[in-house]
Image 1: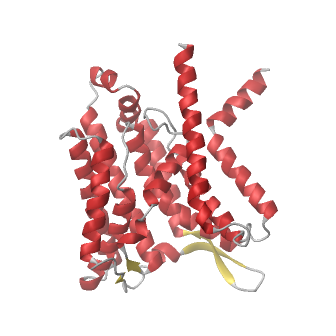
Image 2: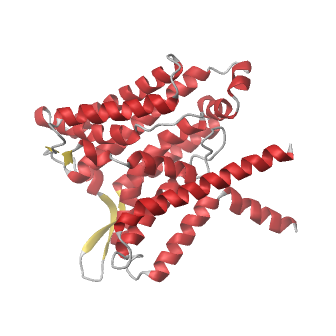
Image 3: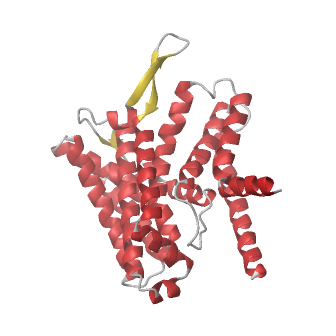
Length: 332
């Protein structure tokens, strides 16, 4: 009896990981080319951009906030890489300026939320629109800024390890972006569990008034969360710029919803105060695998269904979260 309860508890606490593994197994059985090195590598490469942004958004949502500007900052980081490449084609300088720019936007989000007391939804919605518009102005209507810096593309296309496929060609195994994502999540887990800032995020999102009474600086915690989100968007934007070899503002369109969906699928409550940062990575993988499976089965189902399926899945998770919260309140 105790073992069954314990097993149920473990599965419940790691539901997103269990779901990700189930999808991988089912897809592997259904599609012959799913378990190829190239396909799995592509999944992790694509998921890395969503996952990296989900790290920052996880902390924002844990505090009870929301960041709708992630997709725009993501695209603007790519644009900044293109701008800097024109006069200083140095990958390090390009990346640094892109990250600092997005960190500035994130800090502005945090300032407006904490000091001006504007609701996060309104602040980040305005930021999304403003940054998108600024990017369109800079790129003269959304044109792609070419990137020619030597070695810059290795950030996105590089791999560690290689194998020989059935065609006798050498293919990479572990994409560099996936390693960046994994390292990012390791750091994020440590921060969330073992630092004052991480614990404060849970406290602020769980009960802001109680957090204030405990002497926690609510404004500082929220500000740092939005700053972190901006930095993560900058890092992800560098990867997409390296992958596409160009800076285009519209490359981030819709990514904010994938990021939020990843965090929510990971079990983090939109109301804040509860969730595991690591589970956002599994959420990002699930979102990416849905698109991948649709592409593998494109003769049966159109890629246009990807957004609809993700939306339905997100709605189901939100309804389940709402029901769980209601049950907890009813049990008190």
